Image (spheres, rainbow, N blue to C red):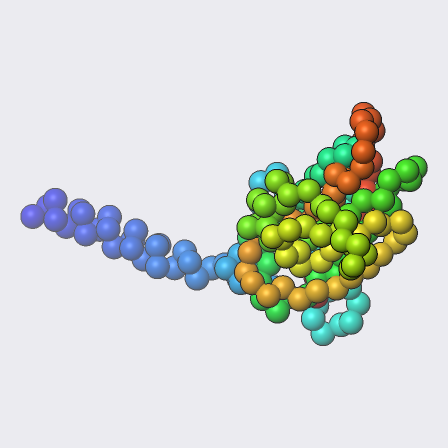
Length: 189
């Protein structure tokens, strides 16, 4: 009898604690399912985006992506801003500038998780008719070709996924030990 009463005294507070523990976090309106104020280990903290009521955009990511000559490099957007996914209906604006020192014109793309896997194996090919670089089998959310000056493009997220900003210089010929620093900015609104 004593064992049953002691176990009830232990189990009841544990059950109450479990029931109330999930009710103490608040949800961020921009990223459902992710508690606000929590940080992903190893992620850089960025400025919080402007409230939806204002028209001003703040940069969620403002960094440079290092890419080796005739290679590519990808940056996980969610790791940088401390969220799990980008959700349908969110708008993103990508701004890219040429690497300091020039010499190359890189392509800058935003691709989802599935396309990022294929992106690693597909080299861009020049399409004479469209006069642009084509990635066979890849459907980028945003694609900026041959960035020679500051370029900006906005798109709306259509599917919930993990997204990457990829800088691609695989269209060059020859070899070099050069590493180019490509400035990129991403804003969500």
